[in-house]
Image (tube, rainbow, N blue to C red):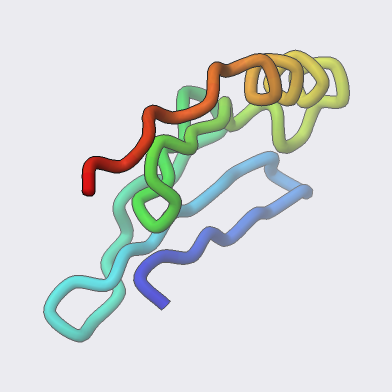
Length: 74
């Protein structure tokens, strides 16, 4: 696993850990801002969207309305 997130609903906090040189390192710990996935290219989500239903719906609407990726050159 190259990346994992710890989500704490009690404090509405997300911690993002990434694998570096065989060990996991804390990359981000936040209650706000944008969480950019490293393991899933081009995926990002507002931290608040994880905890707030309205923010979640807005983020989901934006994700599904994105144009499809360009074809991969062969």
